[in-house]
Image 1 (cartoon, rainbow, N blue to C red):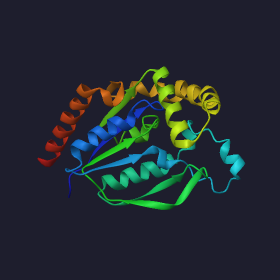
Image 2 (cartoon, one colour):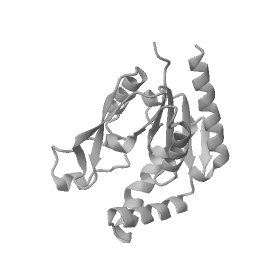
Image 3 (cartoon, rainbow, N blue to C red):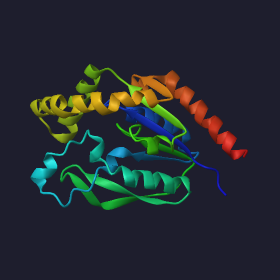
Image 4 (cartoon, rainbow, N blue to C red):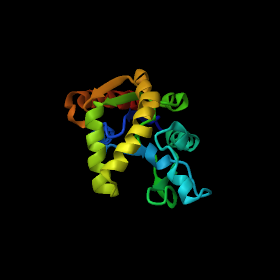
Length: 211
């Protein structure tokens, strides 16, 4: 039987640098065999709702995610079986008809704001990271991203931040920091923390291969 994959959870607030940390780890292990599972792809299917109703969804709340499917897919990958990862349509605010076929790999990175919120997900992880970045820097990054990539106005970004993003961060995301094995300040710019993670992952892989 094949060795169990290493499962890494990378959590943190919106625009904290989770993707940068994920990318840095991915670059080290891409030749070894690594797959990234983004929690954002697992927003619930809202095809049964009107477009106006979809716009009212609080996307920063744990209930916005299809966590059951995410857990099922992680289990499947751990068992060395492929999955069809869903795709989310951010224009229509619901799940797209397309899927992404994902083959099992030696390293599974589960990345997203709330991947440490559910105990069942945490129990599947060998290493749990929380990317910790100051709120002022996160909101600046979010404004730059949403204006450039999503065509949003400054006013709408600030309104969303004050009404849902900030309250949900304080209520659901920040408390998950206590579950992290490692807290990474300043995201992808923290080369020391990333090097430590890489060394730890290599150690686990070598241990598994010798079992």
